Amino acid sequence: MLKAMVSLFLLLFSTTMHANASDKLIIDLQSLQKPTWTEQELANAKLITDFVQNLMNNHNFSYVLENYNDSAYVQHNRNLPDKITGLVGFLAEFVEEYPDYTYDVKHIYADGNFVIFHSHATLNKEDRGNDQKGMNIIDTWRIEDGRIVEHWDSIQALDFSMRVYSLISGGDIENENGVF
Image 1 (cartoon, rainbow, N blue to C red):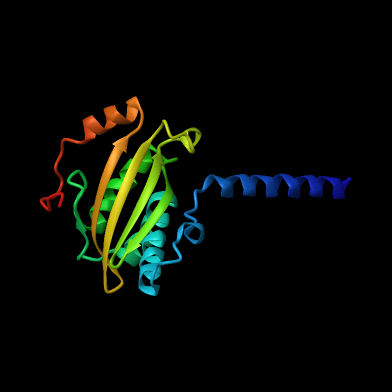
Image 2: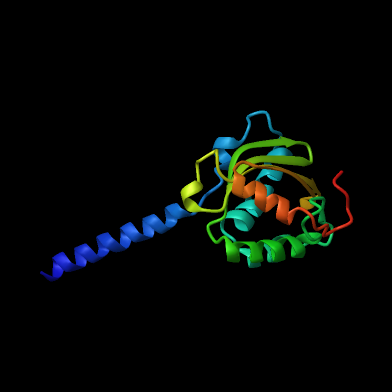
């Protein structure tokens, strides 16, 4: 009887752990990388993948601040505060309201010191994989000497609620860097 109970407990525990692990969206750089990338472009893509995975999917803001908090980071999304600290502060508040927010990377492009992610961001677990929900996002980062120094993005709301959210949140200019 004890063996059966222990076996049942272990089965339930491992199933629960697997379910929790599968909730986390992982950026699969290996399947998204291009064979034509140079070693430097691959290194830049790895850098951005680590940054984005921890920022957007893991919501591990302390890791991002420890590893990427560089005063050289210039934010060109006018609705976000400048610098990594501003970005982390914004996202920390955002995921309090939307804890299931994820960023599903569909394509990665690397060109010299620039890395571009084309992604599908969603606020709710049940919307993941539904290209009629969430946001279509193209992010561009510039890397200099192994550091992320600039970021631009273009965001397309895919459904009515995201278009309304974009209208409401799109009016405040949080930095003076311009969009170009």
